[in-house]
Image (cartoon, rainbow, N blue to C red; front, side, top):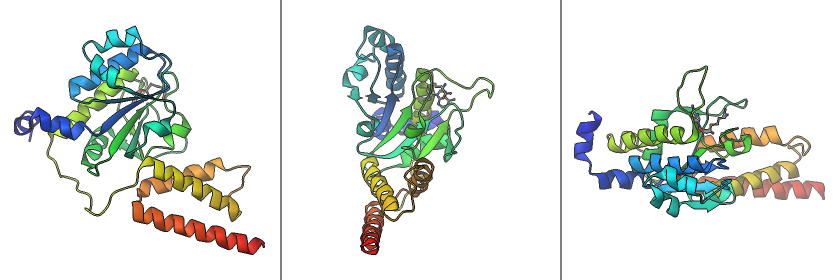
Length: 260
Ligand code: SAH
């Protein structure tokens, strides 16, 4: 079905409802104009949830000017001092990146990413992260993501302006919201835990690996990055997290007994 025909079958209210769980998260944005232009890019496509992590300047007249009628989104924007807080209640975290990284992460093309974001129907939000203008997402921020999304570009000149990257993503999300629903249906008894619970699990995992002397405290980074990627790929639900944490607690008890 082409998008015009599909749109005839779906009202704007239905499209907006499908897009309502999407959070656009801008991290450490330097130029307030980009925040305003992002609000505009979102509103024209029907997105409403703007989250800002430690913006350099906000609110600002420049942001309001660039928002040009989308300043209601700026007023409702939620400002966080940490990424962790911006991800609270999110079950899926997608990171956008202008280039490939050394520890390669699962990557999705933009269209698939938009479809998979819209296919999540667990009553939790989906976060799409956009990095700082100069450096993009840090490795630590990328480790919070389930998938990386790259907007295909000229390989010799592939870095879009931040708000323009949001615009392209927002358009694809709208197309996915208009398109046929239910092409990718998850099992009804599977609801992945949110980002906060995954962080608690990773902290517990790291501590256990130290306790059982598997993790070298002098060089912890690479191992934890790999394990994060593994468990983020698995997208565990609450039962599975309970089992894993039970195994960790039992390992810690056994290690303690061994030492005494
Ligand atoms: N120099 C940085 C570019 C940052 S551009 C780098 O090489 O990573 C600012 C943000 O815009 C990026 O963090 C990303 O969120 C988004 N962006 C820019 N170009 C993109 C592309 N081709 N695909 C996906 N996101 C892109």
